Length: 256
Length: 227
Image 1 (spheres, each protein chain N blue to C red):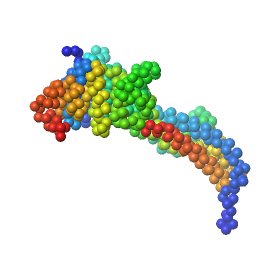
Image 2 (cartoon, rainbow over the protein chains, first blue to last red):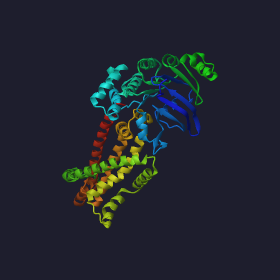
Image 3 (tube, helix red, strand yellow):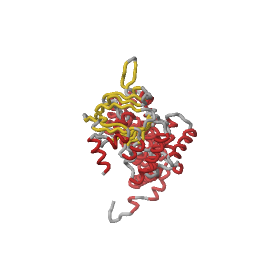
Image 4 (cartoon, rainbow over the protein chains, first blue to last red):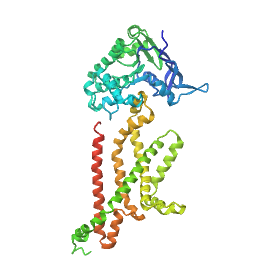
């Protein structure tokens, strides 16, 4: 087994005294595809938001490529990470959000080139070539110059995926990316992710309520319940064969 | 005025107004110059104050709050007097135009800071999060993502501030700035027809504000094309 690309060690997170994560230990291998499932409030989204540094853990540590994300070494002592340290380490992580969070004042193309030019210091020409290639890959070659408000929800989410991919992350996080879409637009987004999962080497963590999709795409399914990992294994082990009562109740609700 | 023998020229003598219009209009460039310089100072300082006001550090936040509170809580005329008549007491002599431009700038900055703060806060939090997920720095996020969106939200209230500023420049007449209102007062002293001249200058201020409103509409349309 390789060195894990991401490692959560005894992660706790609480909001205003309410415990959301209660000691999560999890290792993720490079190129592993993980589906995180669980009821609302089980801590799925919080777990990936910690990895993206959108929240900070109450206790525990997260390692990315063996480097401590939330702590840094200074004068041989561990100190809370500063923004510079976080920026250095989270460059390997990308995220696609439930509500797309595209930049509304920028075209699809400029949404994808902004971070390449400003962050990765690519030339405009180089950034546009990479962005066009990625937008073509998600089937949006005819919408390069469209603003987000001129695109359907599914198209916007595909721009968001292209925008994350163009940064070449080693780990990409999908936070319920189809939850905000009309039912008829869900498939086009799932198809793009399915294609990525089959062809890309990067690790993926998908927070999803699409059980069939999780079964198809994931190498491992993790069921979070009350802020802990209650069950994990291959998709068929977790979704079809598990005896976990809470998991069965959860799955039953989705099969209704 | 004898109400029975009332004539329209008693209220507004068009011929006299026309005759004195060029002299009064000669003050318009000063009115606009003081307004524009004041607005420029206000916009720059207003942005800095808004960022300080929103800082998580109290030693940035509190001075900004006190400044805003002081400026919003003191009459503009008093502040102009402090700058023009007060500062010479400590050896700082400003020209009337400089005092007016700085005074209006420093004062409008307080209002602009509050507009900027609410506009910055009204940009969806998800925009900051996306920027973080793309590993953009705070300043790049602010400059390339947040400010363009906040600007669209801020255009209508900022236009109101600018209109108020244009109208408030009439106060600068008191410290001898040769702007529209001061020119009007000179004409009033010469012609003794206060009604005609003050109506005339009111119409000029109104015309300026109509043009500003037109520019506001164009700016709003331009910034709203993606909404």
